[in-house]
Amino acid sequence: MRNKLARFAENARRRNVVEPGKPIFSEIKGKWHEFFNNSNPIVLELGCGHGEYTVGLASLFADQNFVGVDVKGARIWKGSREAEELNLANVAFLRIRMLDLEERFTENEASSIWITFPDPRPKEKDEKRRLTSPRFMDMYRHLLRPNSCLHLKTDNLELYQYTLETLQQREDIHSLKYTDDLYQSKLYEKPQQIVTTYEKKFASRGVPIKYLRFQFN
View 1 (cartoon, rainbow, N blue to C red):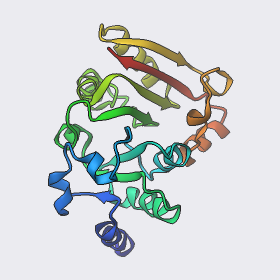
View 2: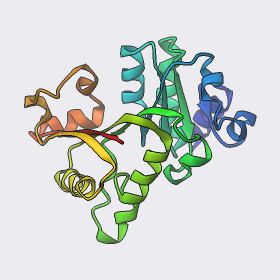
View 3: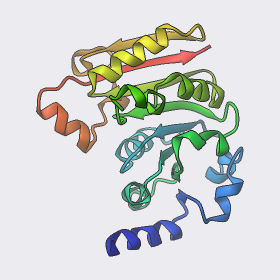
View 4: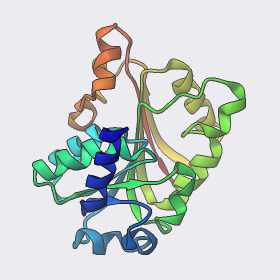
């Protein structure tokens, strides 16, 4: 508990953490370009955990801004610290529930979304909580610029198949590409090659990594 409280205190001091209790938290909606002090595209990683993918993407693409979103402050503490150590000015972390995204971003404010190894929520009663369920997809469509990309990377076959079925029922997407074995696919490019601790664990067990991406009309 003491260690967690110390991390919360560090988050409160860090500029790259936007969370309840800070004045910026209630003012950030529609002002992310002002926060980063540039007009570069804004990319979201949802359920970012320790921020490994957010930091990895920011290291690859200095001409884009990256916001890792997670509800757990003790998790984003690690990513925010690493971003500071690497002097990455194009990284921020936002501590909110995923359902509250539209309270912190305006329509068309994001240029891309990554969902990396989310909780698959396997129980049928938890379908609405899956980050690729229809209600979340409708939210992403509102936040993303037209023809922007949404990426999903997961080890979970059931979530991957559920997401494909969900997308095939929509009439507002295009350019859907997918693979149930990313490492053997032509889709395995530099951004997809960022490997988190979680991914290493499942890959080492021989579990194929699934990946898909698409664009909203």
